[in-house]
Structures are given as C-alpha cells and as structure tokens.
Image 1 (cartoon, rainbow, N blue to C red):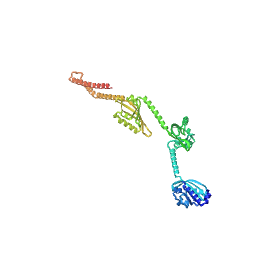
Image 2 (cartoon, helix red, strand yellow):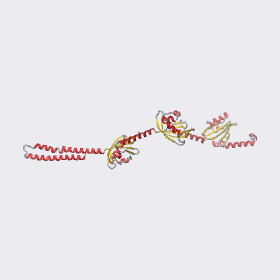
Image 3 (spheres, rainbow, N blue to C red):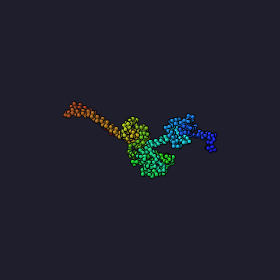
Image 4 (cartoon, helix red, strand yellow):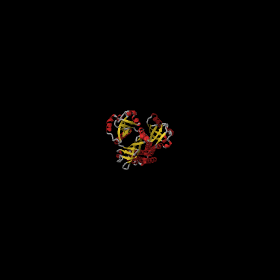
Length: 456
C-alpha cells in the first residue's frame, strides 16, 4: 500500500498518523512542531521530560509566549533563520531556565518547523571538566618554577616551553619555537647528544640524565634532565623537566677540593686536625689523633670529643665556642686539657676556623690542636725559678743585709791600738756572732739555689 492509497482511505490515513505518532513518541530525542505563526502543533513525550512541560500546557500556544526567556538566545534567532531562509540549522545552546545544554536540529516541514533536540549537559560538563583539567596542567606546566619543555621525538624541535625555561635560558618563546635540542647544547656535547637520542628509552619509561646546556648568553649550565614520552596534540613527543645543578656541582667540587686540601694539610702537619660538621656532629680526625693522643680513630661524634676534655675546662671551652658562633666570629683560639689514651691529660692549644652559611648559621669548624704540655711545664719551671730568685733577693736584701751592716759597724768600733781592751773584746765577740748569723743566711741562699738547680 503506497502513500496515495493510505491517504485515499480515511482509516488508512488515521493508521498512518498513529504510526508516525508512535515513531515520534518512541524517540529518545525531544521533538516538537510549530506552524508559521509559531503555535505548537506537536509535543512528544521526551519533550515533556526534557523541558518539564506537559503537552497540555503548550499545544496550541505560541512557543515564544511559553518560553519568553528563550527569545534572547540562539533558539529564537536560529528557528527564525531556518523558516526565513528555508534551511536546516544545527546548534548547541545553554538554556538557563533548565540549567541544561541542548543540541538542536531544526528544519522546515510543510507549513511550519520541525525541531529535534537532546540534552547534552553531561557531555558539555565533561568537556568543561576536561578543559579545566587541561588548563590546570597547562598552568602546572607554564607556572612551574623549573624549566620544562616539549619536543618532537622525530625532529627534536621544541613544541612548547614554559616561562621558567624562557627566563632561565634567555631565549624568547618565538626563538625556542624555531630551535631544537642541539641549539642549547655546547659544541663539545653534540656527540653525546646524538648518542643519547639514538638510544632513546622506551616511550612509557621516564628517563633521567646529566647534561650541559648553553644559555643564550653563552653561559654553560650543569643540569639534570628528566623526560617522559607523551602525546602532544597528536604528535609523539617528550615532556622534559630540567633541574639546574650548576651551583650544587660547583659546591661539590669545592668540597672535594677542600677535602683534598684538608688531607694534604693533615698529612703535612704534626698537629691534630679535626673537622667538625656541626649539623651532624660528625668529626673527622687526621693521623695526629693516633700519633699524639694514642687513639686509633678517624671519625667520631661530638660526644666522644667532649668526654675527653678535662671537666674543669669543659664549660669554658663550650662557652667560648658558643660565644664565637653567636657573634659570628670566624676565628677562635682555645687552651684546655685533652685526655690521652693512657688516661693522662695533655695541654693543647687549638686554633679553629668556623664556617658560616649565607644565613649566618655555623655549619663547620676546623681546628688544629697542638700539644703544648712541655711548653707549659717549662713555663711553670721558669715561674718556679723566678719565685725562688725573688725569695733569694728578699733574703739578700733583708736577712743578709742586717748582720752585714752590724759587722761593718762593729769593725768601726774596734780600736786597733789597744787590742786587749775589754771593750774591744766585747766588740769582737759581737762581731763573731754577727759573722755566724751571716754564715747561716749565706747557707740558706746556697740551699735555695741548689734546690732550684735540682728542680730544673
């Protein structure tokens, strides 16, 4: 039965209409029709659901009177354009009244306009979320404090660079986009670069390597490069993160040189040299700790050293170090007693150099400990001799002077012409007594002198 036959018989036409209605009602899309005066002539079940509008409330009414808030939107302009130009239109539009996005297809049909639409809110929300995620990762890339870039794995040319790369290397974004990996490598690194690129890692395995990069001003950087393969806008690419290790490597080189110098000085000097790392309290000792103090050690902690400083000197030593650190004094000199492995104490003179960070924190103390026990002993002997000499001088100036003065006075009283005179005999007796006293004093002086010689 063709369309003409269906239309010729009333029953057939009604059946046809029911079939069409059943088809329209079974659509998962919303569907409605309007005539040229924009009156709604059909409104299917899915339209009721999507727009929360029963057909009884819209059939026979002007579409724009029912949905006045749609007039400023694409719905109004595109529907009119389809009718006026007799063309099909497709568009997507947000409908605030339903807080929903719709995909719409409208085309002229007979004496009006047929409209198909479906809710694409979930798709739009997903796309927006995806775009937010993309923007987040773009921001993470662009605002990362470390240089990053993306390069083509086939041509090795830059596809994208972040702000840190532009700032660190000195090239503009436009310059980077005209460059490749070889343009940031010094000439002597080319062979190694070719070797690295020829031996590229498996695509899904992150790879890290050390390299030397060249800035726009010619300055060379020691860097750690970590890369991972990605798909960048349909291109097989690698995302690279660069960490500048120039300062770190220079510091390590300085430390190695310092350690080498420390080792040379340690071997050349007869003093005990200690290197105290104050952050870890680890102390390195040279061979002097064995040769002078008898300890077979190379590394100890701070407590080991503190335990060997004489208890009477410990507080003074710690106070002196704390005061130097607080005042940021780089040089320090200390004298204290340090215990030998045999249990005896040796007096040491330590000259120390304290290293401070840029923040003013002490992080290292290198000290040279000299055993001055013999010198101290010699000084003490000299001091003792000086005390004896002072005593002898006092004896000479006081005790010896008195009898000597008396003798000289008595001699003046002797009358040599009359030796047997009783007065002369009395004077001679006194003279003898004073001579004996002077002899005693002289013997005391001799005894003090002899004991000093034996002590030395």
